[in-house]
Length: 412
Image (cartoon, rainbow, N blue to C red; front, side, top):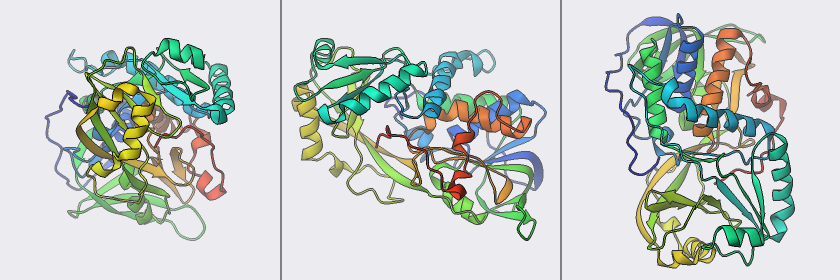
C-alpha cells in the first residue's frame, strides 16, 4: 500500500450468496483473483465467473497493504519475465482497464531498484546482473565510484558495486490497480459474491484425482462449479487443507514504516541494503522495512513499532547520513503469503484435485506478478495450457516432486 493512495472505489454491491452454478469459482478477490477474472472475461466473455470474497472491504487484504513495487532484478528467468510483462501491463493499464471511458490512475513511477553489495556479495550481484541483461532487463552495473557520483547522499565507503534499474523498475498505486481490475472484470460480467468458503464437495475415489463439484459457503450456500481457483493469498492454506492438500503457504507479517527526513535525496530509487533493509521515497516522505527477527506465522495484522529498533535506525543512518535526522511518522502492516518451500509462486492444478487451480505463495512478489499470472491461469482454464508465457516451471506439482526453484533475490 502506498501512503495517501487514492484508489478508485467500485461501490456496486456484491451479490448475496445463493445456490447457483458457475463455470469458474475464484476464491479470493484480491489482486490475483481480480486479475484472473479480468483475463478470463477477456479470453471468453461468455464464461460464468464468480469471485468469492469474505471481506469485500478488503481491509486486511495484501492488495491494500502492499508497498506495490515492481522490479526485474531477480536471479531466476521466470521471475524476470513475469515482471517484464507486469511492467508493460502497468504502462498500458489506464487504457486496458478503463470502464465507461474512465481510465484508472495507476501512478507508475520508475526510478528503479538500487541493489547494493559489499565485497563479499559483489560476485553474486555481478552474476545476477549478467543474467538479467541476458534476458533483456536494462539493468546498469555501477562500481563504487559511479555510485558515489550518481547518489551523493549515499555512503559508499563499505560498498563494492550496485545495480540499478532506472526506467525499468519502480512502484505504483497497488490499491488503485486492484480496484481497477476488479471493477473492469465485473463490468465484463464477472460476479462478486460476499461469502466465506468453508469446504468443498468432491467426486472421485481410489487413486484417481478427485474433482470438486461444488463449494460450500459459511451461510450454507452451495456454489456448483466446473473449475475452482484458490487465490486466497495468506489464507490459502486452510482452504487447501479442506481439499486434502498440504500447502506450505503461511501468513508472515511485515511492518512498513513511514518516516520523514529534512534533506531531499535527489533521484532516490528503491534501495536494497546489503544488511537486509530497504527504503524508497513516498511523496515527500519515505517508507521502508526489514525482515523481523520474530517471523512467526499468523501474527496479528498490526504494525510492530518495536521493529524500528536501534539496529535498524543505525543501519539507515549509516547508509544515508541524512537519515540521522529521520522521524517516524506512521506505520502499517500487511501479510506476505510466504511459500516456505522455496519462496516462489505456486501455480496451476494440484495432481490430487484436477479442477482445483492455485495462484498463491508469491512471498512478497504477488502484486507485480499478478497481471502475468492472471493471464496464465486464465489460459490454463480457457485454452488448456499456457499460450503467452510458459509458467509451468512454477507448477504446484513441484511440491509433490520435491523440486525447488532457486531465487536469490527475495526481499523480506
